[in-house]
Image (cartoon, rainbow, N blue to C red):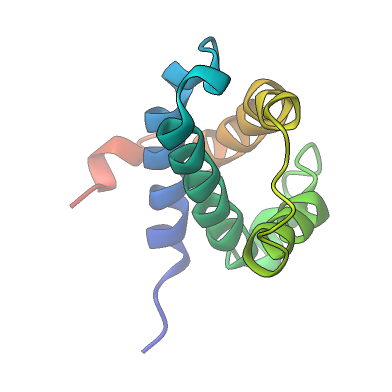
Length: 114
């Protein structure tokens, strides 16, 4: 049975909330936190890939191809880890766009959580 796309969207929004406090922190001082952020971004990217195309088309501000490519890079080229500045840029620029798109799609998303 295939999961409904809402479960992926809710995962993305939950994970973004978890990541938001790392936006202002020095990830170079926290190696395990950096690895956790990378894993969280990978699961966000995988979930973003599984959203339906009609949802993606409604939100052209999100670079959906970036998320797909980023996920593939993290999953398949794991020996080439993005540096901290790249991750900070994603947290500061790409994550807010993704969050805004999904919150627009699901304004009452917190009430949908199990």
